[in-house]
Amino acid sequence: MSTAEASARPILTRAEASPVQVWTNLWIVYIVWGSTYLAISLMVETMPPLLSAGARFIVVGALVLPFVALRRGLAAIKPTRAQLLSAGFVGLMLPGANAVLSVAEQDVPSGLAALLVGSIPLWVMVLRFASGERISGRSLGALLLGFAGLALVVRPEGGASIAGPLACVGAALMWATGSFASPRISLPRDPLVSIGWQSMLGGLAVFAAGFIGGEGGDIHPGEWSLRSLLGLAYLITFGSLLAYTAYTWLLQNAPIAKVSTYAYVNPVVAIVLGWLINDESISGMMIAGTAVIVASVALVIRIESRPRAHRNPAP
Image (cartoon, rainbow, N blue to C red; front, side, top):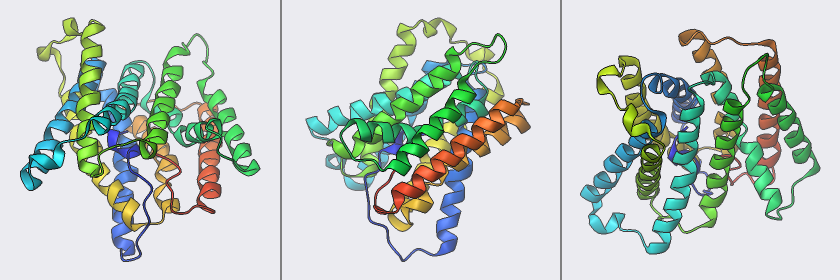
């Protein structure tokens, strides 16, 4: 998952885009965001999780902000105080969620992590309900179904620890909080400027947390594997730049009900890639939980997109 995924504001769709353009960008989001969980697992094989996650977002911010400044001038990337504070908060939630996920994936298989994080639309609905927004009975039923699926997946087998799966659920809640807050606070109006500041500020916070947590002593470049370096490079270039560009384009040019399908396609992609490349096992309980969670998220998106098709129900 990337910082920018959830920062997009509600936007009216356009009818000009061709089906080929829409599906090309959809498949970019499906495959790239689904594969980021595998990339994270590769990155943390030999790299400290918080420092590498922080570096990922610092690099993204250091690429995006100068790019915008060169094209439109320094004034274009200068936020107000309120915008900077808002970008810092969302940055703490979204890169922070990625950082928690990076730590968790030292022990949790990438496919399982993706499945748990795929519950984000369910947590967004919880936050909407908590804020006083009226939620339909069918949506609440789908929500309960989704959390029943989560209970199946989080339940440890044998002597396995529950800490890692719960950390993934915590990351999903952080991501949902940042997503829920984004359209309600004063972020920079330009999406690239917004993601640039979110990435930079969130990345710096995660990087600092890594040093405070003692990861500074774990920096051994000579021990970094090619798999880890490629994983980090993939997260920066494809996960945080290419897929976000595709997602932003989709929000402006495709029906939100179709765009939101990434929320239940990504976990399936991640599970398959984890099985193929990392030789991750897939238990019967995981298959059952996957079916329940994917079905509930699909149902939530379908129900919620009907009365308000112009809004983004999931980050």
